[in-house]
Image 1 (cartoon, rainbow, N blue to C red):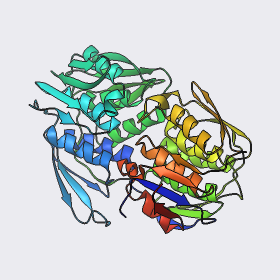
Image 2 (cartoon, rainbow, N blue to C red):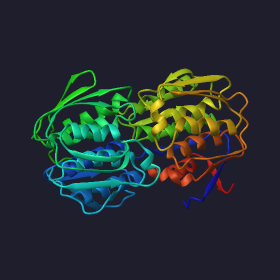
Image 3 (cartoon, rainbow, N blue to C red):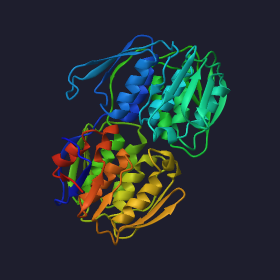
Image 4 (spheres, one colour):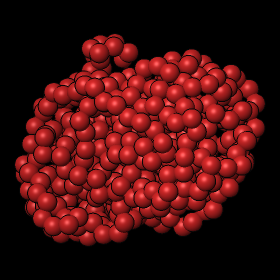
Amino acid sequence: MRIPDAFEVVPTGPLRGAVVAPASKSVTNRLLVMAALADGTSVLRRPLISDDSAAMRDLIEGLGAAVRPVGDPDGDAHRWQIAGTGGRISPVPHALDCRLSGTTIRFGTAIGSLADGQVTLTGEAPLRRRPIGPLTEALRTLGATAVDADGFPPVTVGGGLDGGEVLIDVTGSSQYASAVLMAAPYAAADVQVSATGGHAAAYVELTVAAMDAWGAEVATVGPSAWRVTAGVGYRPCDLTVEYDASAAAHLFALAVASGGTVTVANVTDTIQPDADVVDVLAAFGATLAAEGDHVTVTGPDRPVPAGVVDLSRMPDQVTTVAALAALAEGPTTITGVAVARGHETDRIAALATELRKVGADVEERPDGLVVDGTGATGHAVLDTYHDHRLAMAFAAIGTRLPGVVVDQPGCVAKTFPDFWKALVRVGGEVRAGR
């Protein structure tokens, strides 16, 4: 499907059909880091093919790993073979471009700190507005050289990690802690990481579980505290990347918004926090059924207000939940997502601005929103701010309200390039133009 500059999403009634969830961006990028640091060749089966995973793949190649795609990218046989560095990172004479990927620049900064010289990382303008200061401060505490631009990219790191204890303020992103933990097996001495501030702790636990599976010695030593044994690096692995719970939520939202029934396949057991969004969908009036690796969501005739929804464990879902709240007759209060102000864009402010365009009543709060869709009528061009999650969330609104146009819909390529195809597959309709 060619993606135009704008899509009008045409309401066609209740959507019905089955689609396959894409592979997880969060897991793909973590495993690329571990494969890059491992001593030997690893295989990732059915990794996510997207802009973000391409950025991470290019980054680890720039740091010395070798990645060889094998098989059909659209088929089950597709896999990446990654020859790791054994933790030996060489200096890079040019800046590495992380594009728009927050995980890439944050994880890459920690990996780059292991180099015996300098590594510089940068990205496109929106990425250079995403904070990185707490991470570079943590790396300096552990003995590395780390210089940023007043707390933002670009960043230059290197010199290796001595080890020791570090307290990281992860209010801005749990990725700061994940980044340090993933590099820690290659420090000169053990590393103890303690996290402070509100954060999505479940994403750090996702990192810790992956590290353990890849052979690192990492132990939880207290609330939001972990100790990593130095000198016990990653072993090469051969595994299949699990589904993306965050992307699946956007597919489920199509059923809830349109009053239809959507089945998502490839939904396996996971500790991804966004898998819990199904409980929030139930609060909007949806019913759910699971059979094997298939989960089916059936929406109500119209979403009902979900009450107070605390999304502190899964702040990425603020876009999904706010979009559904804009269709419900009555207020829904979303809390715990202050961190979303530092994502691809200030998602709280963006949602407040765009949902008002469709007629929803929106109160913007420091850590969330109150959204009432009683008066929502549609007929608006919605700016995505080049944010993939805003684009997918706005698509759900367009399945119910007329005249909803999603600007720059191609930004979904960041994590879910086939999203618009999936929408059409379940009976949705899009047409180019404003």
